[in-house]
Amino acid sequence: MPDTPIQVLLVDDDADLRDLLRNFFQQRGIEFSVLHDATHLARRLERERPSIIVLDLMMPGVDGLTALKQLRASGDTIPVVMLTARADGVDRVIGLELGADDYLGKPFMPQELLARIHAVLRRHKLHPEAPPAEHREALVFGRFRLDFASRTLFCDNEPVKLTGSEYALLEVFAQHPMETLSRTRIVDLLHGPDSEVTERGIDVPVWRLRRLLEDDPAAPRRIQTMRGIGYMFVPGEGGEVGDGGDASEGDDNASQ
Image (cartoon, rainbow, N blue to C red; front, side):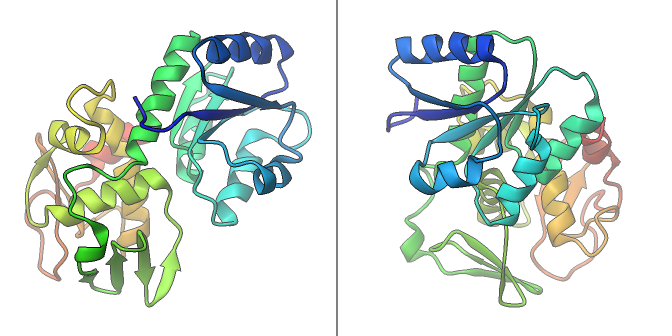
């Protein structure tokens, strides 16, 4: 459970769902506010900073994907869980690629949404085993510099926009360079040993990081696939260590 109170902002045009979730969350002492659509989401966030946004995909006016794209383009990395009544896996991949932290299909149980929210918020917290950021030197690899103090990735001295989950995963890799990390180990480092996140749940974030870090994401050299095990982060300029040139094990699963 998070150490600070959770504040949830739901953006959904379904009045029945809004009422159901409002009652569910408020009964559990969770602050809950709503927007009927995403038209004024940016303005709302200027005066209210929830812990997380639950954003519906299909809405009149500004749809969820457009709202998410605008949010991330502005540099806002607030956690977002997307909701959809559509079974189209393409929308799910697009949403995750645009920076959604999780995706939940309708219909769903409120308890499942709450569990997803807790998992996403855990990902956005610094891992307790990490040393204090102010005592850690930045990691430089190739054109990139990872500044732990500011939690910022730079490429050629220009900041790179990362979601909270992308930064958390990159920090895990940076703390374990040249080390083969199983998917189970990565999930434990990110979410704790009792997390409900599946091992395959890290493949999409890995895929997104590769698109940012690799010259050729289809033949990754920074985040290499260790077939049947997991991944290895290679910060130097050396050649392949494992199955780095074959990204299909993680990426194919991410795109389905």
